[in-house]
Image 1 (cartoon, rainbow, N blue to C red):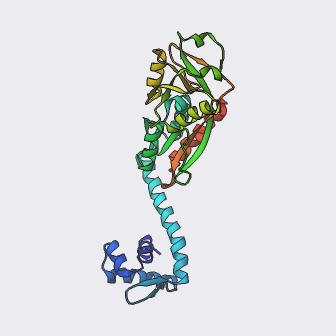
Image 2 (tube, one colour; image 1 turned 135 degrees about the vertical axis):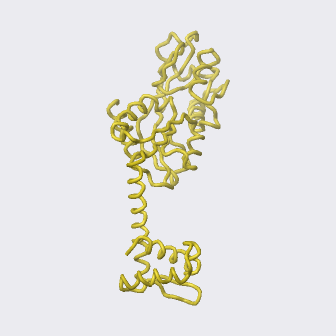
Image 3 (cartoon, rainbow, N blue to C red; image 1 turned 180 degrees about the horizontal axis):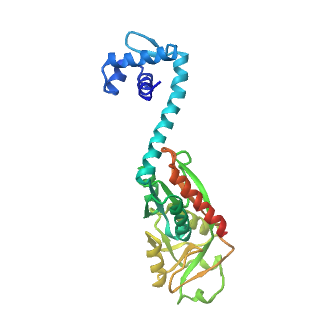
Length: 293
């Protein structure tokens, strides 16, 4: 049995018509019929019950449909792997710098030793941009805080948990403290990541304020960690940031009680099978996080 014959059989099974399948596969109807007949003779079974204008699967045809689909998927994967080994398979990563920074560098260093020919592309993206890029197949993996509502479309692998601290300018009255009470944030000028670009962060921070009876006085929204940190440095307000963040003229203060840690994970689309390089990269991310914990 040849893969081409299997492809033609699957087309006829899916279309329910030899004529429609022939058109889809760019063949004449007699040519496709001969190929399917040859396949039936080779297997020694009838695969279709033929009607005047349609075909339906026999029990044997149903088995071949199920198992043949798996076989073709496997064959296509083998072709991709062989081509990738010669060309250098791409690894396109979207990430949030404030959450993935140090981990990403170490994981990529190890990954490159295992796949030296891989073509790595890194994109600093917001949550919304990563969501869209994954859906459109523009990136292979997103390293960020998992977003809600896509449990079927995405598969998340937890990597680590980040604590949240308060970032204040060096000139702020809080800067001399070793720790800050959550209640002290009531009415402070609060700087946040954009609610449109980072909805999970926005919802988490505002929910924390609301549940503790505090006023979230939002004084500015920012599209990334660099602009948020610059605003804090300039004295425009205070911000809640990942505990590993470090910036000039910005003091990071623990909060009491400690806010719920943020989960950082690697997300891939379930619409496409993750390549070997993506799986290896995620594995190295997890290993680096475990060794650093």
